[in-house]
Length: 199
Ligand SMILES: [Zn+2]
Image 1 (spheres, protein in one colour):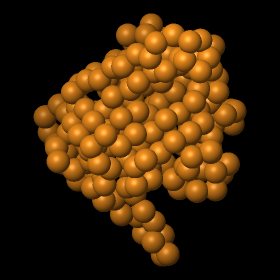
Image 2 (cartoon, rainbow, N blue to C red; image 1 turned 60 degrees about the horizontal axis):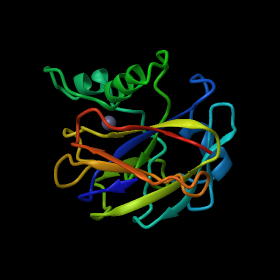
Image 3 (cartoon, helix red, strand yellow; image 1 turned 120 degrees about the vertical axis):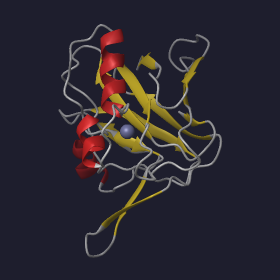
Image 4 (cartoon, helix red, strand yellow; image 1 turned 135 degrees about the vertical axis):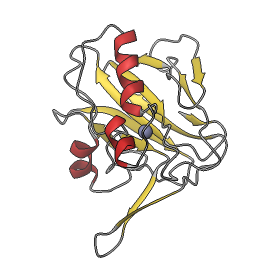
């Protein structure tokens, strides 16, 4: 997963191919990793606490929030936005529909490149993403799964820097099947590519 221009937050979702009711869950991952930000070598768990993705490589500053829910229409309304505003929940819903999967709850995503920190008193603060152009994360699929990455369109709270920009996904099957890698990207705030990854 590539932050093409840098400074862009993304909401990462993954659903098992066999059962969309089992999905990557940041809140189930935290007790396993014991960290707010997963590190290379650690696994993302599903809501059934099975490893679904392994974080293999991270050349970004390493901040990938696990605390914030995906932005949705109610979030924007609470921030004073009266007009319709695209959200990660909407991006997820449209991607799920395009895949022909049944509707699902919005899981607690892994918010890639999103910098939310907690001080010693428990105060949370979000900072503009510090990832640079071309920073990337490499995940290995540990279960057959659908992976959906929403380039977060949040432009009210400054969690992305330099405007809303694209994220890209390269799917590299060479490790398991020897086929050529695929690449997809989409402008920020629009429907993002979805990829089925084979473990
Ligand atoms: Zn969002």
